[in-house]
Image 1: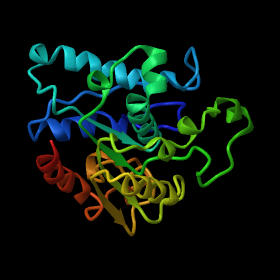
Image 2 (image 1 turned 90 degrees about the vertical axis):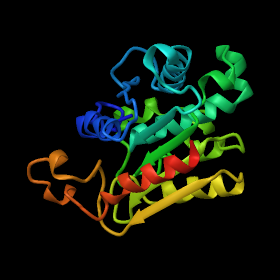
Image 3 (image 1 turned 180 degrees about the vertical axis):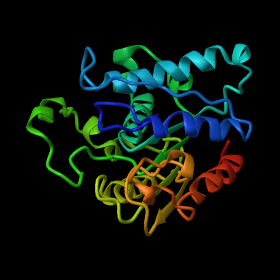
Length: 232
């Protein structure tokens, strides 16, 4: 799931990532989720978008030639918040009862989070006044670290230490929650990389942002492949 500050979807974090995993034998899709300008609230709608998508592919696994026990979600920046919130909803009896789903049908088998927003209020700039009403009031939706349980999927996290947009404290808070709940986790914090480097290769570099081509930070992708082989 691409990031995009909940008002757009970053193309650089969609198809290029999906094609990279496809090249290594993974059937991949780019999922869209509810944004600020869409009908309905961002949450719980965005989280439900994820759960319904997982359920669809799990129910149609034979048609799409996929293993229903090896479904992985990946989210970047705001998309990381959506993915981690969806994991919380999947294991929560409150949401299971309210939205009539069973955990086994909707939960991912592993999750990858790239420079993820975890706590909506932990960003490197003031929240715009116009966006304040879009912040969910439920604590487990506002701060996805609060919803982590022992049933949370194994998680791979990567981020740059110098990220000026999503503060590194987001990843650290989530890592601590995973550790406290004995959830398997692998973490890679790169010294340099800023925010939004995607796969950090030349094909995703925006004009004037040559720093997005970062061979060192790009190693997260190969590391994630190795991690996936061990965890799904």
